[in-house]
Image (cartoon, rainbow, N blue to C red; front, side, top):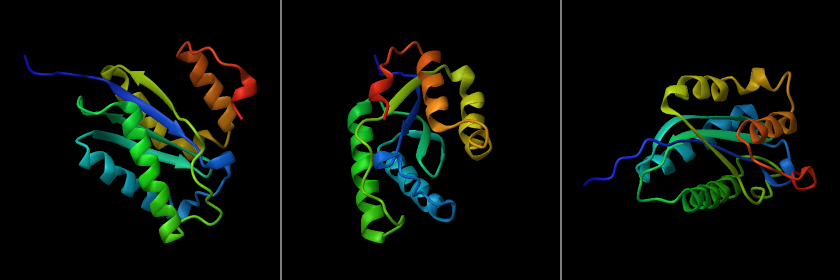
Length: 148
């Protein structure tokens, strides 16, 4: 039997110490770079977006790749690209870790629109409010002391 999967991931991570360094004018360069990495790894990219202090990716991951190794590869390569090109002033690397949530294919449009509208969303809601709400919605237990 062949391998068939239908897992949509919503992946989030931040710059080190959540520094708001990802300027709007240059974010698209980062997102395009990450898109290229995902495509080279045979992932289907639905949406990449973010604001100054974090980014979101909606993607399906090729069955031959683990999520952890994919995120590691993206963070290493994109971090190196940012530092080499000096894309974002004050970039000190990515924060350790990441978050990933799974979604049904039937909720893909909602997820894509949510990621697409990050700038509007964050005029009303802080990253920490958004993040803790996502953890709660997905039934993930967490200790607030370790969210910084």
